[in-house]
Image (cartoon, rainbow, N blue to C red; front, side, top):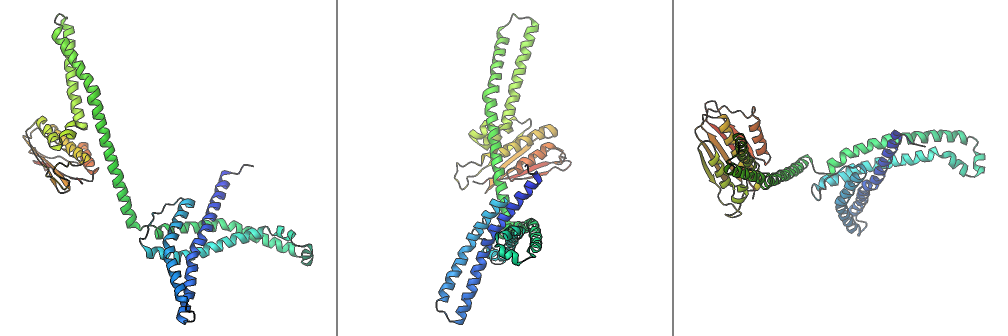
Length: 411
């Protein structure tokens, strides 16, 4: 017989809840038992009738202290295995809160779990009372002529108890699912700090992976497509210089193809430098920015001040931070050439102060740049934010325009 999916899910959930509560009852009641024994021993110590009571009380207290982290670990495993709820292990942090859970909340929950399990057993026994009746001697049945009617009442009560157990168990499990993580795990501030640390680490890994992918693409373009275009341009140049007896139309086609190949090489070179310039890895940020300033269509005054840090005079800033700084300067100079044709000069200042790399790009254009209306400036801000940097821009109408970027550069 095929069990309907809804019924199968309900049975599975009821079995899970019952197992969860059955395992939780002894864990919750253990600390209550130790407290009960300790209270009795304390009363004997006060009375002074038993000289061994102080020693036994000390042993019980030590066992109770050691039981707190052990019970916490057992409860964490119980929540994870049966409910799929992960609770961060607090260790010896917040011991009073853990002890309060096991001594007060746990004892109360253990009592409820025990009562619910007793109700389950009573319901199972009551619903099968007819079987128990036929198992007793026939003399007893003969001596109790109304036992069948009484058994009917007991059976109905047992079935009612069994019907109520899943709902009660589900409610108790939901209550424990709320109380357990709050009292056993880290508090909201610790959890938030842990999540922030995890997100920061994962984002740093994503930034490093993206930077490595850009380097791979740059190498593939430089060693593959760019070399093929250079070879094509050389062949077209040789043909253009040696084939003098071709018709004018053919010579025009070769000359046009040669010029297109050279233009493609130049555009591909710009693309490769925009992805991740090789000079940035080979000679550092100062040399890479010098190349940008030399290729800019307007005079650029560049000042790079990277004093040696704690790691030594030869230490470099993190490659991801250098790449962001290079991209910021490159995009800023491109924007000046594109959107500020009246600008006569630009200034780029890069300084490292402690653990901060500061990049300032300024021009004497008419201003009016608005980061909220330009996708390029928003992309710059997002790129700076990917390494926890800050992006500020001042561009009043009439100028000047100044872009201020601060990038953390831990050693």
